[in-house]
Every structure is written in structure tokens, then in C-alpha cells.
Image (cartoon, rainbow, N blue to C red; front, side):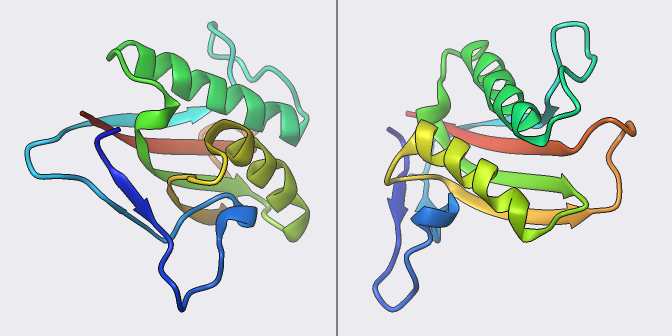
Length: 133
């Protein structure tokens, strides 16, 4: 892995919420930026109106995008997450999906509640930043 995840003493444990406080990337590391992915199939259509299903498909899509660069989810340093109509009930599916994929060392993540995304049926979108060792 080309990066180091640190959750410093003196700050709460963020991992149950699906993120880490800090990540560092060594100088000279190549960064791969993944544009906002959402719960779409190969045709670009949203696969389900269900929020949890969109979350799962979104992370699968990020994996596909990273694989095109010879990387996987373990290379992700940062996520920027957009949630339509965010409320606390949406944190559970997001945290579960992140913990399933990254375990005790999730990437840093910022969650932003938004009124809408590109199309009316999109409920969840994630940008990713990955580091190539």
C-alpha cells in the first residue's frame, strides 16, 4: 500500500462511521482520481431506487474504475461522498459498505448532504482518490 492511515489518539474512533481521520501519501506516489461514481449499471442507468443497493453498486463501480489502472479498493486514500436528502438513517448502509471493503483501516471520507445529483434517481455518489505504490 502506498499510503498510511492514522487515527490519532485524542480524536474519537471514526472507523464505526466508515472513515479515518488522516492519510499520508509518500512523495513521488502516483495518484489516480476517480470521478463521481453512482449506482449505475454498464448502461448508465441507476440499478435500483433502493438507497442501500445504490451504495453497493457505487462501490462496485469504483472497484471497476480502479481495476482499469491496475489498482483495487485497498489503494483508496480518500472518498468524497454525496448523499441526497441525507439523514442519520443513511449512515448505516454507508458505514457497513465501507467497513466490508476496508475493515479497520477505511480511507478518509467527507460526507456531504445535497438536494440533488445529476439525475433525479441518483441518491448516492462517491469520488475516490487512490495512490499507486
